[in-house]
Length: 116
Image 1 (cartoon, rainbow, N blue to C red):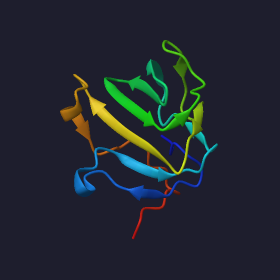
Image 2 (image 1 turned 60 degrees about the vertical axis):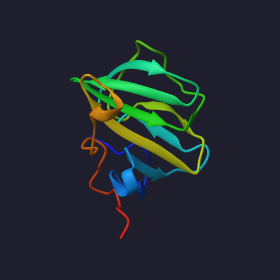
Image 3 (image 1 turned 90 degrees about the horizontal axis):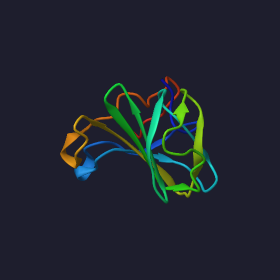
Image 4 (image 1 turned 120 degrees about the vertical axis):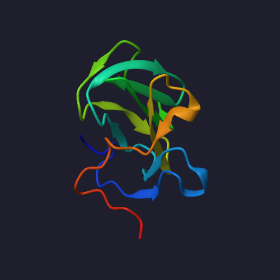
């Protein structure tokens, strides 16, 4: 498991005021990396979704994603660059509807700093 950005600082956590994921401080151009190995199942203008063992890992606010649908990625592989000022990360379990979000479990590296 790995944090999706280097020197990860969480700026908004799951469940705070109904927030559906976790936001990380990430200036424009910050590399965004896969938290877990899997297959890219969706690439949109600013979003990449990687499926790992029936869990979707959703990365939002990417400028020019660097992967394509169907690609296989390993933990730590670069997915694209953040648009800034943050990266939104969330996890969904099957059947992957909006209400199937859960508190992220696969993005916290031991060096991740949570807000006080």
